Amino acid sequence: MSKSNLRGFPLRLDRLSPSWQACLPLAALILVFWVVAASAQDPPTEIVEIDIEEVQTGLQVGLDTLWVLVCAFLVFFMNAGFGMLETGFCRQKNAVNILTKNLIVFALATIAYWAIGFGIMFGDGNAFLGLNGWFLLGPDNSPLLDGEGYEGIFSAIAWTGVPLEAKFLFQLVFAGTAATIVSGAVAERIKFISFLIFSLVLTGILYPITGHWIWGGGWLADFGFWDFAGSTVVHSVGGWGALMGAAILGPRLGRYSETGATAMPGHNMSIATLGCLILWLGWFGFNPGSTMAADAGAISHIAVTTNLAAAFGGVAATFTAWFYLGKPDLSMVINGVLAGLVGITAPCAFVNNFWAAVIGLIAGILVVFSVTIIDGLKIDDPVGASSVHLVCGVWGTLAVGLFSQGPDDTIYGEGAGPAAGLFMGGGIEQLIPQIVGILAVGGFTVLGVTITWLAIQAITGIRVPQEEEIRGLDIGEHGMEAYSGFLKEEMR
Image: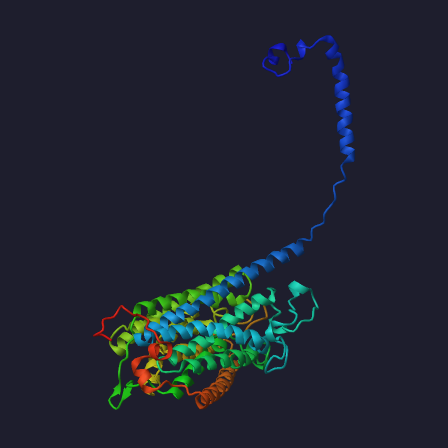
């Protein structure tokens, strides 16, 4: 380094005295020895072996669990959708009663399903019901969590690697949905306590038994019946409970006369429409979440088939009502959207986009005619729950046997899933199990809910007194009004 380059350097070596310059080599040697000695005291670096497969499995379980929980939260929020929908479709004097039922039913479902329902549905047992897992007690047996060969008591749901409590929460919100379906059909005349008792029986016993047959490894699953997200397991079961409850209760006062049916329009179509949109949103947890895994391709496909069916159902119901009833009735549009969603719930993972649209379109047409037929039978269903959930639940279950792409073209992978449907070249191989499942679940549920309704009627009664029904259940059952102070005295 030249002297010109030393200008500004902190230590001007050229200005050191000769004695200090002579010490520089010794200082450098001491520095070298110090560095070597310090390095010798450091422990050797350990070689850490990382099991890449174990890390990947842990990440996958974490992602799957997050996906399942988010979808469970979406389905839980559907309780708000049902509450808004049913309240808007009914008269204002019963709004508090309907809102209260929709709020408390999920709390009741949580208790009943936690105590015995989940064990009956998914616990190891026999072909007809589970016999283990009460109060969610007992070991899980997911191979991803506990290793191959681990023996648990929930074998039927061990195919998904998420923790047991995540599985429980996701299945719980489905059970709550089945009970909520009944609420609208029996609205405006049922005793509050009677509905609470029925909801406990449905979610704790009846729903889990038929659910075990299909999702719990029971006899219908062995027979080849397929229902991906619950057209039969959830919606038809709730629909049968709604239909039988409405029939046993009888129509609302003044609903039917010798001259025909008297219109009893809903008091708030704004919140009914909001309820429909909340339910539409919640269905993106209901159907795609049933993969129980964060499989990008599967959940994307199911989300699209779900949305297509809802859209075609709404449009089909709009024009069917327009031509058949003379006006594009908003209540029919709402129920058309929901009909398409119910119809696609069973086959959403097994059909292509074109057939999803067809399924939704047919569901939208069916619901309009079903509402008028059930009304013609003088079965008073204020919100059309029987038509949406029962009729279209049956249709969606049959659609698996008609339009399934076959076991080599589903999210389950090659060789798994339902056989090809009738219109996909598979003949009636898959259609037969679907029909058997519909009849078996329908027969058992009709028998079970009828016995339950009649037993409640004998013990506590199921219908409010006539004067209370006329005045409104809000005052009679709850001692309050939904819109106190907002209505003029003359209007009351």
